[in-house]
Image 1 (cartoon, rainbow, N blue to C red):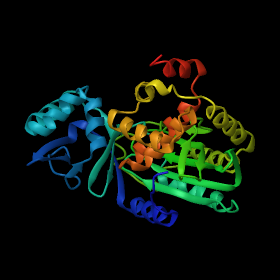
Image 2: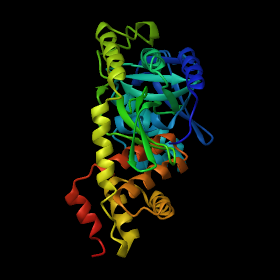
Image 3: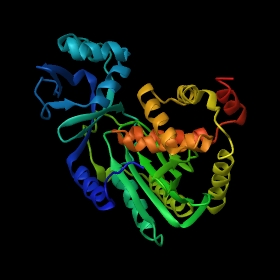
Length: 357
């Protein structure tokens, strides 16, 4: 599992961001993007053209969301941004004026980090962490294995060593839980089982979300509410959802489900890889499960080094390679892919394994 923040560091960063972030509902007719050398800034204007707030840097996620909102293809948007920012800002500003719409602008540390629908329901890291951390703290011997806040998500990964088993003699796995949330429109609140393998500190996220909440709520009106305040975030139904989150966390480390996953792993130890073309099997599996070429090279290396040419070995090679990935988000994606490999239909595995037959 990729190393991240300690739970203390996570809590400190959540509190810092809680105090530093601001949310605005604005009409795009009052937005202007302007190039400053190689950078692009966003201005939020009054009707008389004066700045309502300081000009903002624009984050990568917000850029992509602006392009999607204006139906500008990503590759073209990105090319204009890199090679001809004056053209990009002209196009964006023209469409903002031609098709005005109310949008939610999420701001942190002077940067526009998200450009969202005014129906976006804010369920922020602070609310989620405040609900789950006390529950996790009540679990005897629970271990915060890895936490992180990226530009796109918060992650809390906890292991419960009281629930463990052996896949094969000496290969011990423990049950756990991963809680994730996005404040920038890139995913719902998720609570998922986690399997932690002691022999190489691998983490595997079970792609079976027990609780999920999409960030869609009532319409926010820019004419009535230019700046949104965190104290007004949670409505009664949101409070009910947080109670459900707490109940789910309490029950997340389920012994029966853990037992089924361990049996799945044991079955995978008997599914041999076609040794006539191991690289071919890995390449084909990577293509089907969304692993890119450079990652495939790393997976193959870990598979060979692990000397376990089975489906179980391939799954572990994927999750082991996740520790080498710079991006915490992508590392977590690979932890999910590792489980998806184990859970694949056996006919699919037979087809992949016959690549060199």
